[in-house]
Length: 379
Ligand SMILES: Cc1cc2nc3c(=O)[nH]c(=O)nc-3n(C[C@H](O)[C@H](O)[C@H](O)COP(=O)(O)OP(=O)(O)OC[C@H]3O[C@@H](n4cnc5c(N)ncnc54)[C@H](O)[C@@H]3O)c2cc1C
Image (cartoon, rainbow, N blue to C red; front, side):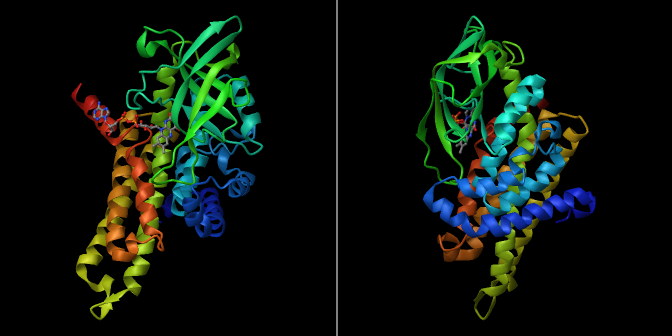
């Protein structure tokens, strides 16, 4: 990988540790998880023993306390193995980040006590009436003494059916628009929390995506994250911070596609020579490499800025959009390079293409990112 010379010895060690784990425990089983449409709980246990579900959680609370750059290095490795599995683990960072932004030490301690032993969390923002318009939130949280009573249904929640703790966004004051939204930490075992329909997805099928339903759930008032009315701001800041980390998995998908295509293009002979010797194929591989290198550098740049305390939502959106679009282009070309075998489930390529698609949709669609990026420039 071209960034090797920039890595610290610790980052290199972690990268090799995760690469080894992916080769032994993820790649050989990824196709099976895809067919079963199931989260691989046993493999997750092994990942959790290595602390891979705790990348962002500070070490004083039992996590790995990694910076964004290191997180991206590891998320790329996971993405090379199975993007669905990588997304499940990554959603723990998404669940945790609202607390990093606005939580108290006590809240972070409570959250950590739940996930550190080997559990997952989930970030519950989207509702059925439109994920792009996240401010149009129908879930309510009504204060009642020293509790809030939560009612509503969240849609498309990664880890929805398996998380032990949720960060939930709900309206504490209707009529105030996004300024009436607040954020809460909600334990999954509270009475009234239930899991709704599971999504049967096109890709990232090793990840669990469900509705999460809150019916008269009594949440202790000290589980409010930040202040009342700060929820939307916290949600947006969370996504600004996590987009580069997630996009590193998209880069991993691209790298896997390149690795598979290079191998295939050397082996597969048509018209008496390896297809890689046909310039049309060779140039497609060159373009895959050019685009992937560019996506990786953008993602790493966005991560590096955050590690220097610079939280620039614009660069985060730029990196997310470019990496997602690149993953789609690169994997589509990869299918083409393998021809009929690229289209067949006997080879890993068509799955990469199905997995890549989500990177143009979640954490804010790539159209919405373009709305944001152009808005920043034209305002
Ligand atoms: C597998 C998966 C996992 C997910 N995980 C989570 C999670 O863990 N937590 C969570 O809260 N959410 C999650 N989501 C939800 C995800 O963030 C939303 O699906 C996404 O934000 C888009 O919302 P939508 O699906 O309702 O599409 P819509 O908002 O209905 O958009 C439909 C189409 O219209 C376009 N569009 C809408 N408005 C505009 C506009 N103003 N300008 C231009 N184009 C526009 C969109 O780009 C899109 O192409 C997940 C979704 C999926 C599929």
